[in-house]
Amino acid sequence: SIPLGYFGGIGLASRNGILFKGSNFLDILTSIDMVIMDKTGTLTKGVFKVQEVVTADIDQQDLISLTAAIENNSTHPIAKAIVKYAERNIKILKAENVEEVAGHGLKGTVDGKVVLAGNTKLLRKDSISYPASVDELVDTVVVVAVNHEYAGYLTIADEIKEDAVTAIREMHDLGIQTVMLSGDKQAVVNKVAQMLSIDKAFGGLLPEGKVQHVQQFKDTGKRIAFVGDGVNDAPVVALADAGIAMGGLGSDATIETADIVIQNDQPSRIVTAIKAGKITKQVVW
Ligand code: ADP
Ligand code: MG
Image (cartoon, rainbow, N blue to C red; front, side, top):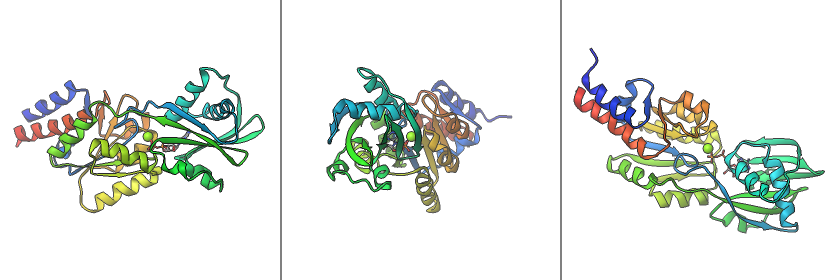
C-alpha cells in the first residue's frame, strides 16, 4: 500500500503547481544542504529593458541600428530587449554571417561593417580595447564594436522577482545554504546577491563553469538542489541531487531533464517543495 504521507506532501505540491517526477524526490528534498540557483529567469524576471545608450565615435541611432540588426538573429532575452527597443523608431536592417558565441554574444556583418555585440569577453577575444569604466558598471552591459573598434554600449536591466527575498530567507531558516551561479558579469551578480542576502555568488560563468561549481560542492559532500530555467542549465540540473526547473519561461531541455518542475516560476515554491518533502517524511516515518 502507498503510505498516507505521500498524499499529504504530493497534495501540497500539486496544489501549488509543483510537479514531482517520482515520489523519491520528495525524500531527497528533505536532506538538501544547499540550493544553487541560476540568476536570470530564476531569481530575476528574465525580462530585460534597455536603459541607457552610450556611444564613442558613432551616431547613437547608427549604434542602435547596427546592434539590433545582429541581435535580431538571437532568441536570448537580452537580444529580444534590444530589438524591441530599436523597433520603436528604427527599421531593423538585415545582417549576414551572424554567429552566436555562447555566453559571450554575437558577431555579424551589417551594411558591410563587422559588428560585435556582447559582453567584454567577446571584445577581448578579438583583442579589441574598450574604456576601463565599462568594467566598473554595475549593470548588465552589451558592448558594441564596429569594424574592430569599440563603438559604445547599451545597459540592460532586469528585475528581481517579488518573492525572491522571502524565498531565500526561508531557505536560510531551514538551515539551507544558498548559492547563485550566472553568466552575467560579477558586479551585477554581486548586487543581486546582496539584495537577496544569498550566501555565495559566482558570475561570468560559461555552462561548463556552472557544472564545475556544482561538482565542487558535491565533492565536499553537500546534498544539492539546483534551480534553473535556461537551455544552458540542463547539464547542472542533471548533476544535482534534485534538479528543479522553472516551468513558465523554461526551455524544453531543462524541463525534460528536471526531477521537479515549478510551473508558476515563483522562487517561494522551491521552499514549498522542500516543505512538501518534510510533511511527507513526518507522516510516513
Ligand atoms: P545566464 O543565463 O547565466 O545569464 P548566458 O550564458 O545566457 O547567461 O549569457 C551570459 C552573458 O553573455 C550575458 O550576460 C551577456 O553578457 C552575454 N550574451 C549572451 N548572449 C548575448 C546576446 N545575444 N547579446 C548580447 N549579449 C549576450
Ligand atoms: Mg540563463
